[in-house]
Image (cartoon, rainbow, N blue to C red):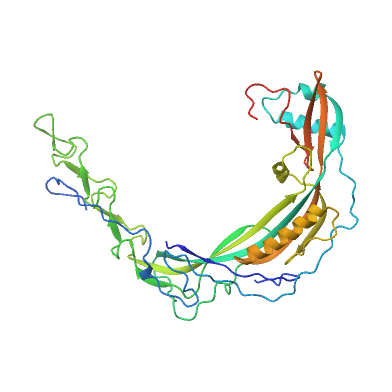
Length: 388
C-alpha cells in the first residue's frame, strides 16, 4: 500500500462549536531458477491524479490539505473561582490507617505488624493544585489504497471528488479518542495488479518457482546406501514443494488471483483528546507523576469551543500555567488539525504526610487523592523478595 499523505489545517477562535456534521515431472533438476522479486507496494504510475488530491501520491510525503478557516469570534474571558470552598479536604487517623492497611494487603511481601501496632504521631497536609487543559482535535489524512477487483463500481472522474474536509464523518462524543476510515467518492478505478503483473499468481518463494526442492533424505543424489534408490524422491533427487504443491507459483496475495485491483483514495479521520497537566510544587516528597492516577476536589471547570486562560485564581502559578498552555495548544494543534472543543479544570488534590512510631523508630507514608492512595517507599516490614 502506498504511503500516507498527511492532511492538516487551521483552527480559529469562537464561543461555541458550530458543529459539522501442477506436480513436477521429468528428470531430477540440478538447479532451481532464481527468485523473482515481487513489488511490495504499487508503483506511482498506477495511480491517477485526482483533482483536489494532487498531494496524495504513492510512496510520497503527501500534500498539505488544510481544513477551511471558519470565522468565529474570539473566546471571552471566564473568571476563575472567586470565592471557592477553601475547606482543605482532611482525613482522619482511621482513614489514614485504613489506607495503609489496603496498601499493605496489596503487597504479597509486606508484613501488617506496623499497621496494627504502629502509633500515628503526626498528620500534615500538603494539598496542591492541578490545572488540566484538554484540547479535542480532528485531523484528516489521505492515502491510496487498493483491494482485489470483483466487479465493484468504478466512479473515478464521473464527477468531481469532494474535498477531504467536505466529506461528512460521524463525530464521537467530545474528549474521546476515535478513528474512522472513509472511501473518497469518485476516486475508484481499475488497474492491473502490480504484484503479479496481471498474472494472478506469483512465484513460490519457498522453492523459488521451481515447484520442487532438493530431497532432504538423499541430498539430491537420488540414491541411499550405495546403489539403492531413494524411496523418498523415487530416485529423482527432488521432491514436490509442499507450499505450492509442485506448481511453482501461488495465488497472488494482493489481487487474490483476480489479476486486477480496484484503486481508490481512503480518508483517515482521527479524533484525539490532547491533555496536559500542570501541578503546583509541594514539599510532601511525593513525586508529581504519582498524582496522574488520582482525582481531587474540583474547584473550577470551563468548557468552550476555544477557552480563554483562567483569570482571578489566587495561585499565580496556576494562572501563569493556564495562559502558557492555552496559547501553546491553540497554536500547536491548529497547525495540524481542527480544534473542536477545549476544557480546563482546576482541582485541589489532598495530600497528607503521616508519621508513626513502630518498635521505637519513626516512619512515614503519604496518603493522596480522593482515592486515598498510599506511597510508602520505606515501609519497615518487608521480606527480602520485595521489589521496590
